[in-house]
Every structure is written in C-alpha cells, then in structure tokens.
Image (tube, rainbow, N blue to C red; front, side, top):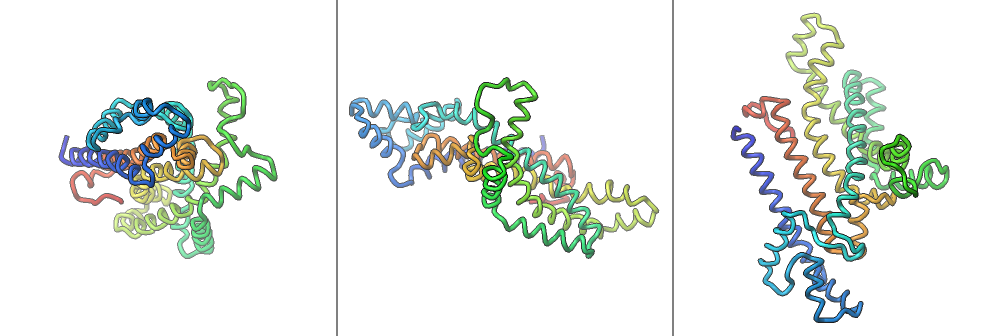
Length: 334
C-alpha cells in the first residue's frame, strides 16, 4: 500500500473521529441540552425522581452525573458497538429506526443521482459539440434556470400539481398501506411509484448544473493537442468523441458524482418532509420537532459519515481511473 492510500485512510479516520466528537459537542450546545430536556420531560410525565438517572442512562448510553469526558468515552464506546441510544418519541432503538429508514433514502438519492448524471453527461457533451449554436444557447439558459430553482420548491409544485390535483402519484409513505411481499414485481413497481416524485425533483433541479460542468470539461478537452492529432490522423468523429473526449471529460465528474450522493443525503431532511417519505431525513425532521436528541444525533452522524465515506471512496478509486493522481502528476478533481 503506497503513501497515497495511507494518507487517504488516515484522513478519513481523522475526519470520522472529528464528526463523532462534533456530534457529541454540538448537540450539547443547543438550548436546554439533551440531558436537561430529557430530565424535564420525565418529571412532567410523573416519573419517580429516583428512577430518572437510570432512565437517562438507558436513553443516552451515558452516565449523566459523570464528568463530560467520561460521558464522551461512554458515547464513543456505544457507537463502536452500533448502539446510538433510544428514541424519546418512537420508544425504539435509534439504530433500528435508522436501519429501517436508511435503505429507502439511499434508494431515492442514489437513483436520482445516477439518472441526473446520465442526463448531464449526454446533455453537456451535446452542448459542447454544438458550442455557439442555438441549441447550446437555449440549453445553457434552461440549465441555469432549473439550477436556480431550489429542489424543495420544485418538490412542492410536484406534490400540488401531480399529487393532489391530478392524483397521478401518491403524496406520502414509501409503499401503499397493507402487507406486500417485498420480493415481487408489484412491490418494486409500488415503491417506484411512491419514489418517482422525490427522484424527479432532485433530477430536474440538479441535472442542469452538472450538464454545464460536463459542457465545460468537454470544451476544454476538445481543445487539447491529442484531439487535434486524432483528427489529423483521420479518426472518425464517433471514435474521437468516445475514446478521447468523453473519457477525459467524465473524469472530473466522477468525484462530483460520489460527493453529490453524500450531499443529497443531507438534503433529504427537507425533501422527505415535503413528500412525507419516511427515510432518515424524515426522521431527522421529526427529531428536531420533538427535540429527540438521541435520534437527532444518530441521523446527523449517519448523514455526515455518508459524506465522509463518499469522499473517501472517491479518493481511493479516482487513482485507479486516473493513474496520474497516484503518481502526483495530476491534482484531485475537487
């Protein structure tokens, strides 16, 4: 293992440790603090004062009367075994809630990101080949227009027009009510039917910006000497566009694709609330409303960890795609 990978692994581990530490510290800086909030809630519920400390220890996985560094050690030790405490609002372990919701959020965000990048790569390449044409001008304007619309605004428009007025798509839940075998075509179709509006809102508002990035990359590659040489050699346009232009123009998009998945997981907090789609973003919003600190800390940790892992995977795999990064002949794309 060369120094490139050792450096990236060390940086990822350090970043994850900082994320865990910040999660522990930031939540406690909120007004009231989780322990004060939970203690007040238990008193209002009429719980015997002698039992309150034990209940707090169960919910938060720490000893509330111990010094802060002991609580920090308790918190980290619990995380290492996958124990993120128990939700106040739902009365279930946070790990169980996250484990149930996370696959649905990943399904929506990864599908949306794959679709928008596929559209952006083709769209951007066409704009670059037609640079200066009416198609390029109109496409650039449309790209900028859609990129300026916040995804949650477009999501509300979709819910109102296609959900409530037209009745074409469901406006809540991940699947239709009632038990359904998850290994059937009907279940897959039903899940896609519920996810299509959230996916559409992400694709429409983000594809334009990525298409403009692809256009810029392609125009830059088209001006490279090796492309001119390929043309002088009489190679066909299709071979030049695929083997010379597209391959090199997509390279910088690769890291953007992985990191955008991580950022979109963070954006799921608002998106899933708009569509009442019970993923981790929906539960994060519910935790904020109920001041459910264990659930809030758990979801925040998952979202930030996903972003760190996305950057880490991009770091490790980008060197395989572009060997110049490993040898230091090329800088990273972000």
